[in-house]
Length: 242
Image 1 (tube, rainbow, N blue to C red):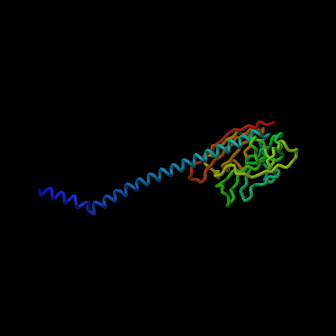
Image 2 (cartoon, helix red, strand yellow):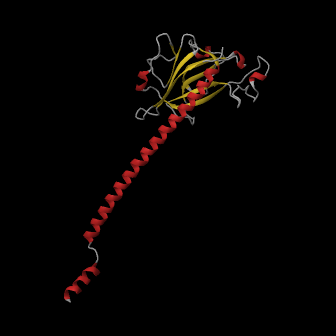
Image 3 (cartoon, rainbow, N blue to C red):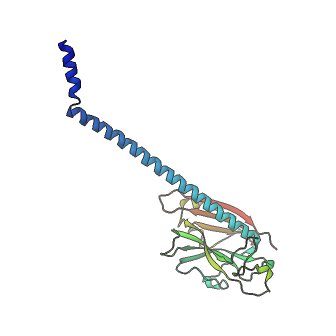
């Protein structure tokens, strides 16, 4: 009978201070490990989402550019320098380090007289676009039917010849690399012309143009910072307009 009374007394006494401290330490370790695992998982998921977004944006930019190249008559191999030599070319306000990479001569039936320019630049400091570089397009807007607009919503093919057509600077894609080691793989046939800047610069937007000015090889690289994984797309495009 005495033995049972002692057991009841121990049960009523509860945990000692040492036992509670040990339990708290163990709980803290478990929570800490769980939190670290969740943080690492969230970071990995965020990186994966950014990489997926980068690939999607590059793919969309390449598709748009490819369609416009196909609509053009030729791709210029000799880009004037200084760049004001390109008829009426007016880069985006506030942008810097302007480097035209792709200059398209429109098809005769397009209704356009000025070329369309794709160029690299640093985004303005106050811009929502992220660097280190962005790809701008200088050209007319497009209508839903795929034809060019005069800037007032009218189809260029439907207005009198010689009528003014408004050109705008629009960012095609941002977070373009300022130089990626992967670009060392860029190689074109020796007969191709390399777009400015020199191939030695290896920037995030590059073009090699065939001697007939009908074929162009394109590369685009996204890399927000040197430690981030680069995403890239490339394509060989041929103009279809005579």
